[in-house]
Image 1 (cartoon, rainbow, N blue to C red):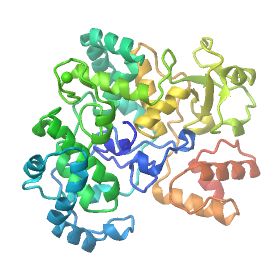
Image 2 (spheres, rainbow, N blue to C red; image 1 turned 90 degrees about the horizontal axis):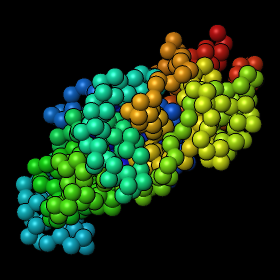
Image 3 (cartoon, rainbow, N blue to C red; image 1 turned 180 degrees about the vertical axis):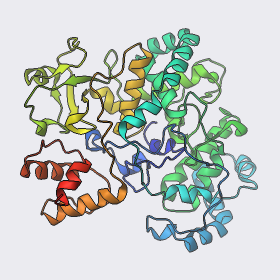
Length: 455
Ligand code: CA
């Protein structure tokens, strides 16, 4: 969601995906990480979003040190911080007071609060994630999810229409976020947001970030927008069908059904309108879509893909790009970047500025593409035209490290090996591919790894 935190917001079922990890764990906070150039993100499925994951909420802390190596994540440091939890909460009172929380409410809401240390395992979860982009899209835009979304669009047609009029945001995008974030509210997490944010504000390596989320949660409770027993969500404090973080809620939530409460958990009108307002405030361009699947001409210069610099659709057309479905581009003056999530063998996309807006909601290209794709399917569009290279084997984390090390050994600059195929690694892959006569699409394929290994 919205900015700040959004990323974490979804961290519900960490399929541990991969990452975007700027911080090592999947989805971490946006604001802290700074505004990312969206195209520099990896195309790897994010850890959040509603992809089913094995058991979650009842987990106990493993008692182990976190993998990040951050001193605040050592087992001893976690135990010490947990032992000091009461003092820490008492020390957060000035933040709450600045938000206008009354002393009586502070004491009432924090009475009996204990840390949920199982969150520490989530916070440092290793981004080992081997789900291919096409499998991720299949899950998030399954036939069931398309049918369910269409049903909800029909049931709430007048609300969606009113929200479109009020905010200028395409109803199918909002419905797709609803579907991708929580499978339409069926996967929203069951951890009390106050406990999760209190834990993260007092234990572990994201304390500064979560102090604000904790006091924002208190503000929501004091205002009475959402009852305490309904303010539950992911381990990172994201709640409701579209997974708002507390600070994002305070910034974007609206009372669309006019009952005096901004209830993004149990009021569908409030949830839909708040999500649309979030997108609008993040710069949604009304009347434009997120992007187009395109067909590339023969002998296309793949070095043009993946650039953070946007070029007009008309210029892309002059290079021979066409919409994959054969229709004309409706707005040739729109600016777009070219994305090849699975390299030259997979489908290609021109991404418009609204794609970047979706990535502000949850900064992962795979998330944004899944959302745009689900929106198009909900609208009645068909599957992508160009097939995914489904025979392609996705590299494991270890293999991605190895690929980076082998590139570095050959003199290609990859920065510090981290197992994440970011822009620098993709550039190195392109250079290597060029040097051996392969198509320089920057895709970390098993073929590239084989070639680096001298096979
Ligand atoms: Ca309301």
